[in-house]
Structures are given as structure tokens and as C-alpha cells.
Length: 273
Image 1 (cartoon, rainbow, N blue to C red):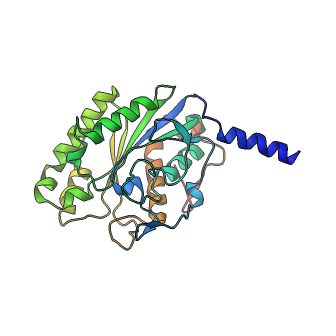
Image 2: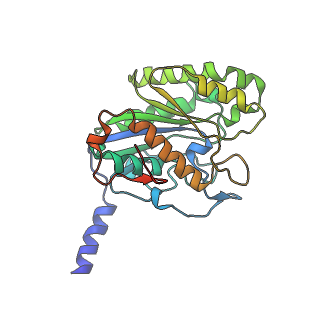
Image 3: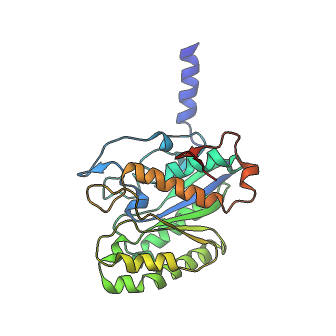
């Protein structure tokens, strides 16, 4: 009997994910959104914290535009020129589901690529077109894009001109993306830099923290633990960032306490909300 039940469960797990309504989240930016947690000397240690574990209610849009069960590393078939590790996406998804059961199935759409400047995300670029194409595909079989999660800017701290132009480029990117997705008020949660590849970090952080657009929130990652390269977040820091993003998103939801599951998760001794 046990063997029979096991085979049924295995067949179900290997079958294509059925079409269903989803709460969809776009993950875009560069390496700290893609995830480098646990990656040292181009090797991922394979450690997946419990907060980032798989969940039957969390799916990922794979590179071939099909929905598959989500698991770390989320960007393994998207950010393909590097070794990817733990990012903030899975801890984010697990946290929002634990605190708002009305979201149903969460669909994550990885789009982040390491080492990319904001100028490479402009309308008409490969990265921009890929983001819009994957977002459009994600909703074809049902679902709604709930938010854009954005963490980018380390590459724009190297050159003074890039840093000075960053705010205008970022604002245009957000406005263009909302327009092309036909979602003029979609929540965008961006992350202010925790680290940099060059000397102009404060100029870029100033632009990020000072951006004033409706429904655009900014979380400050400064102080989160960095790995040996002093650029990429550690695995615990990526988990913490995902939970910070979840808190910010849940604050955009109507009556979050009403929609929350009875056993809301606690982080650091405090309720998520």
C-alpha cells in the first residue's frame, strides 16, 4: 500500500502544473536579486534554509515559459553565465503565504541578471523585452501580477556619470514598465543598495531612497550581512531581505490581518505584520 501511494504522489509531482489563478511576482534586477547566497569561488554550497524550502503553493516560471515547482536557486536557468545561489524570492513567497492565505498560489517570475546597469534595462533592450515577455506569459493561463520586486544598482556605482543619471533612468524604467504591462499602479518594491562595485554608492542610494512615485516603496538593505566579496548578500541576509520584502508587500494588501492564516509566522520574535 505504501509503495502504491508513493507512486501516485511521485506521478503527481512529475506531471505538468495545472492552469490556475496565481498571485504573480516579478523578480528583476541584478545579482543580489538573482541570488548569490552560499556561492563562494563559483560554487554553491547547496544549503537551503527552512524559510526558502519548497512549497506546493509556490511555482516558478522557468526559462521555457512553463510553470514548475519553485526551488532554490530560482534563477538557475535565467542568470546562466554565473553560479546562482539563494536569493530573496523563496523566503518572500513563503512569508507572504504564511501571512495571507487569500493569495492562493504564488507564481514567481525570475528575470534578474547579474552585473547589469540600469541603462541595460531601458525600454527596447533585451532585458526589458524579456521581462515584459515573461510577465505577459505568466498571466496567460490565469493570475494577476501583484508586485514587482527590484534590486539593482551595484554596477551603476562604478562610473560617476552612471550614478548621476541613475535616478532619471530608474524612474523612466518604472514608468515604462507599468505602461507596457498596462498596470499603472502596480506596487513596485525596490531595494536600496547594501553594497557597491564602485565609489559612487551614496549617489545611487540617494536616488533610490529619494524616488517619489506612487506605489513605489524602497527598502534599505544597508547593514545586511555581506559575503567575502563584500558585494553579495550571504544566505541569511537573503532570507532576511525576502522577509523584509514580504512585510512591505503585505502592507499594500487590504485588511491583511483579516486575510492572514491563523498561525502567522514570526520573525526575530516579532509578527511579520
